Length: 391
Image (cartoon, rainbow, N blue to C red; front, side):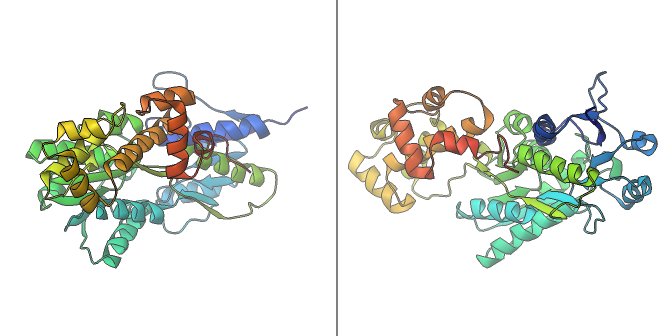
C-alpha cells in the first residue's frame, strides 16, 4: 500500500511569492508524493495555523519560523521541520532562504545606474532577511562611494508579519519625511514598497522623479496596483518550494538533507515606472528614453522616436549615443526584450504572442534580438525560470 505522509504547511496565501512556493511544493509532491495536506476550504482558504500546529499530529512541518517561541514549539513536537524564513539569525532546523545578499546588491546596482547622489533603505529591523538585504545594499553602495540612509520601520507585533496591515501608515510617513529628493530607495519587500508609494502620494512626492523606488519579491498584484507601478526584484518561488519539499521529504525518510541551508538566487529585476528615473540633463535625450520605455509593448522604430522629439535625427542620435552609450535602435530592442522577459515569466502565452505583445513586428526579429541580448532563446529563458526545478 502506498504510504501517504501527513505534512503541515504554515503559509499565508495572501502573497504571490508564498503561492509560488506552494506551487513548487505541489510540483514536488506530484513527482514524489502523495502528501496529505490540511487545507481549510472555507473563506478565506488557508493552511495550518500556528495554534493548530500545537495539537497537530503528522510526519513533517514546513513553516516560516519567526521567533524563539515558535522554535521551542516545533522542537517539542520532535518531527522533521524545514524552516522557510530568514527571520532569525540562529536556526536549529534545516533552512531554505532566498539570497538576500544578492537581492540587496542587485537593488543597489540598479539604482546606481540612475546617477543619483543619495540612497536609502526602508524596512523592518525585526526580521533577519530585511537586515541582510539592507547590509548588502549599503555595502554595494559604499563600494561605489555612495551614501546610504537606513530607515527602520517596526511591525505592529510579531504575529502580524503576514498581514497586509503589519506596519502602520504613520511609520511609512515618518520614514519618507526623512528622505531628501531626488533619492534612490530600496524597500525591503513589495509590501513595504507599496506602503512607501502611498506615503509619497500623501506627502505630495513624485515617483520616480523625487523617490526612485524598487522593491523585492515581485508580487504581481501589489506591483501592478501600485500607482505608479512598482519595480521589483523577481524571486524563484517555485524553485524555492520544490527544494523545501525535497529537504523535508529526505528527513521524513530518515535521511539528513545534503545541505542544512539552501540559498535560492533572485531571477532579476522587473522594471516598472517607480524606478524609470532619468537623471539626464539633456531633456531631449530624456524625452526620447521615456518615449521608448512608455512604448515597450508596441512596435516602434527610430523614426517614431525622432518624430516625437524636437531635434533633427542626426543631432538626437549623436546626443543619445554620447549620453546613453548606445544608439536609439539598440535601446528600443533592449526595452522590448525586457518587456518580453517579464511576459515569459508571468504568462503561459505562446512565443508568437510574446513577440507581438513586446513590440516586435516579426517573430524572427524577436528571436534574433532576444538571443543577441540575453544569449538564450525565449524558450530556454522561460524554462530557466523555475518551471520545474531540477533535483
